[in-house]
Every structure is written in structure tokens, then in C-alpha cells.
Image (tube, rainbow, N blue to C red; front, side, top):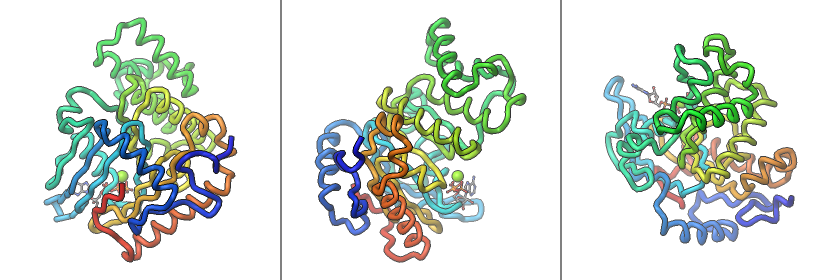
Length: 309
Ligand SMILES: Nc1ncnc2c1ncn2[C@@H]1O[C@H](COP(=O)(O)OP(=O)(O)OP(=O)(O)O)[C@@H](O)[C@H]1O
Ligand SMILES: [Mg+2]
């Protein structure tokens, strides 16, 4: 597999960083892709989203605009408190914005939640203590009225993927934090949602399990053609997984830069993770995100709420 050879992929000279709004050659490719996908409904469309928490008068988000295309993998990265979780909760309709609009597959966030259009795996595993591991994984399938035998085979397949087959009949409290997190991840994947919202889902995992789950996530997201909005503090993780890395900065939380790292190719990356992770293009993209984070921190070069797609 040649990492450099794929469309829209960073070159040996480094990734095209779209902070100045000047589209480079690689970005032109992705822009024409965008034109093609623009005909279809965006997985997520955020327009001028603000969030002010009256308690403490915190402006958690200011003028955030972002379009996530169908099947696109977008990571949000930025220092603690810059509003990543708030943004994800707003997309999930667990929080209301104080300004701006949000649509999910062209619907209001509320309608998308009612229609169960997305799966979520958040910082806390959110498992139901009184349900076994298997029953937790099957919960969204029950809500989707999937027949029992199909639920059984799907949960068995997912638990095997997560390395938890032997724990199917155990309860969450009997599992380690990382094991609980793996259950929460496969539960989110169970109904094969067309949108996955994930907030630091791999934070509690050891490095090798984390890399395996990253590969599995790419494989499943590819198979189910899901768009993913993924929050992480890990630059290499964001670069490995994403088509674009959205860099945010705090006070007020806003998008300062969008780094197109994309084109690793979900299935290829899942199969050739080591090759991708040790490629010059990968290191160049990591350096670009790190630089964007540093610039955002310093407050220079920030473009509040700019949609660069
Ligand atoms: N329910 C709430 N009430 C008041 N303020 C809140 C609430 N939730 C979040 N905030 C504030 O909004 C800001 C953004 O918080 P958020 O949890 O979105 O940050 P984050 O980027 O996810 O941080 P971390 O990386 O630490 O998870 C913070 O200043 C936080 O104190
Ligand atoms: Mg958070």
C-alpha cells in the first residue's frame, strides 16, 4: 500500500493545511469530492453555533460552523475546556445551542435523536449497571426492534471483536474501566448507525488495545458507511483516524484550523496500520496538527468559526 499514492493524501512535503483558505493541489482534490458530496445531505451541518452556560457565564462555543460529509471521519482536538464535548452533546441533542443551527442528515438534531440516527460513545461508558454486558450491547438493537436471534448473533460478533466473549454474562461493575469502555464502543456500533459520535472513547485503553480498536473502528465505519465525529486528545490518533482534524481553542471555544489529513483510507488503514503510522506523510500530518494547536493556543492565526470546507 502506498500512502502517498492515494487521492487527497498528504505528500512527502507535508499535508495541505487549510488555515489560510488557500486551497492547495491536494485540497483541490478534496474540494471536488466535496462538490460531488454536496449534492447529498451532510451528515452534520453546524452553522454559527454558540453556547453560553449561564451558570458561571462561560462562553463554551462561539460561532462554530462545520460540515461533516456522509462517510467522512472528522476529529475534534483542542485543549481541555475548549468545548469539544459540548459540541458533541449539541449534535446529539443532549444540549441546546444558545445560537446557530444544527442539522443531522438534514433533520433537526432532535428529530435525528428521536429517529436514532446516530450511535454515541462518550467519556463515561454510560453502561446500564443492571444489564449484563451482552444485554447492554443489545439495548440499541432492541430499541431498533431487531429480532432476538439477530440481536444474539450481532452482539456475539461485536463482543468477540472487543475481546469480551467470556464476559458476555457479567455485569459492568465486574469489568475494568477499559473493558467497560470497549462494551460502550461496540454498543454504539451495534445498530450500524450512519453517524457515530465518540468522545475520547479510547482514553482508558492500553496502547495496543487502543490501536486495535482504532483499526476496528475504521473497518466498521467503512463497512457501515458511517460518518464519525470523534473527540480525542491524541494527535496521532486524530491523524490516523480522520479525513480532517478540526483544531479548537478555548475561551471562547472556536475552530481555529482544519487540517485535512485524509485519504489514509479506512479499510487500508485498518489492515496496514503500522505502515501508515510509520510513514513520512503521517509524521508530517502530526506536525501540522501540533503546529495548529500551538498557534491556536497563542491566539495568533485564529479564524473564529471559519468554515474552511
Ligand atoms: N453544564 C455546564 N455548566 C456550566 N459550564 C459548563 C457545563 N458543561 C461545560 N461547561 C463549561 O464549558 C466549557 C467547555 O467544556 P467541555 O466539557 O465542552 O470541554 P472539553 O473541550 O470537552 O474539555 P475536556 O478536553 O477536558 O473534556 C468549560 O469551560 C466548562 O467549564
Ligand atoms: Mg470533554
